Length: 549
Image (cartoon, rainbow, N blue to C red; front, side, top):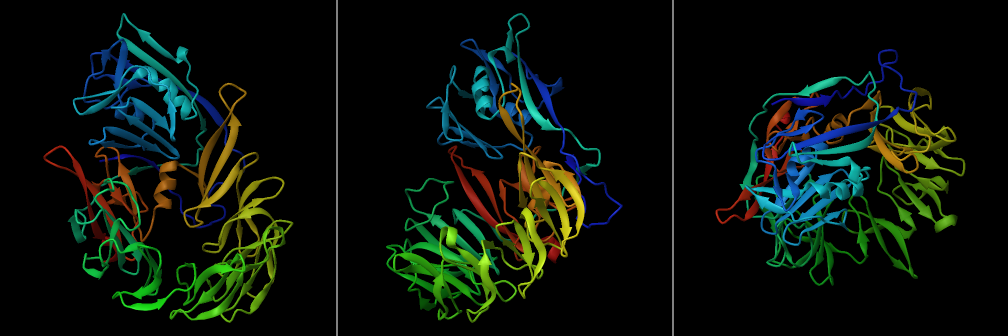
């Protein structure tokens, strides 16, 4: 099992050992040719034969092509799901969701219905869609396809589709890496079971498990009185068994405490890991605990104000702030006033301001620095309120290992700066696009606005970066999903998910339809199960991280 990945470069900033990226990546217009030979299993992308296990055929004058074949040829990492009971196919590719309802003969892209030519149908276990529909589907997915781009050769019984797309030119410094290895069998802390319809790892060894009521379809994530909640440990042992359908909302607050809203929403209370009520909540809202304090909020004289409670629910800092963030490094960002008059500063656990509220907005402290915004821009302050990095940037991420991404003002350049404000490396020019920090501030995603195929329209092209420069989407996804040394990865050969390490080596063999990141040594996984009557169900399990043995 091998497939191509681009290398994920180390984020260590070794000056002189890695290239500097200073130019906006070049955008290329590329035309791909897809060719389908009717009556055969031959489907080509740019003359490269694509996997196909059933024949292409004609029906009512339309070329019928399998959905999976076309979408995986277009997008290697597309996630395709088939609901046998409802006979609906869903395709997920980034922000794009395509749904195809066979019985209704309806196709939607991101919830918007598009015209349909001919009729979809299933054959030999595959969903076939008339090829003519791909013009409307792809145009809705921001490609440029006209009637002239789809050609039928009746003599050769061959259909050709030409699709233009904008892409960023490859940069020489992005090296290739092969994701390899078979991986080992998962080590189950809790074996796969159909007992629950959804399980979430909430941290500290706790898991919230739900069983849906009779009226909730399988595969639909929901919450409310129609759900039966349990709190379980990593082995599946039930720690708190709430009476069936008695809970509207259940959240983990940290510190072995859970927030419960009753089914009729008349009661709000906090329980410990045994289910014992620790205190009722007289406030409308409570957020997770951080450093022994939790933000609470309620309506006071017609407006929401926020304060802080301790582990016993005692109000330690009165409700007086229009915005309040969790405590970090002993202090918390809070705001006074509303809208244009809002000012942000930092308080200690007594509620005293240690940094006066003079900023437009504030971030939480991380590595001794917090981001603040003034009328001039974004900068950073230390815990004493001193300006360490002047507010000259358009935006910035939090510091990780002594460095951060920062986007300059007028020039809109992305730089790596250190915790004294020194510019270490120019990553790229954003110009008319936008940049956002990702992956716990270790990565940067830049969306460039480029001229479209028509020369009038515009399209958006995304490039991903780590702190050394451009990386592939595959490398970006790998690093973004990395936790405790492993990241969930999708193997398009087996059409299953497993886990790989930071070098691209498969550690846990692909055997799941869903795999969540590891947290506190464990990860939640899901697998679809085919029933003898043709229906499907889901099994959920919990696996242990083999790297932490």
